[in-house]
Length: 106
Image 1: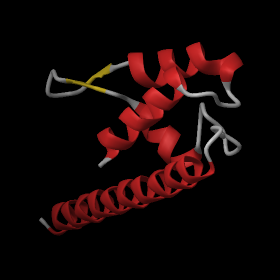
Image 2: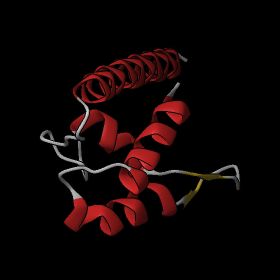
Image 3: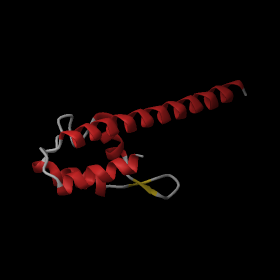
């Protein structure tokens, strides 16, 4: 789901009129070009993508296209991905806490 929303945002930034035209290159470079090497040697999109969803970093809370229906869809999609990311982080934190507690008992 996250990748699909990123594809829509990428194409919106590249091909549709929007209110972030002065920042378009900055957004594209930081969110879509930047990558980080993960501990397993693979590459991932990094914190910029996560922060786009969690805090509206880079595009801002006022990001608007010239299409109200697409604006509403992007807002809802970002909120849905944010909720998913936060639930995954909560699961990960719970698992880490359980492992930590198990280690303390040993």
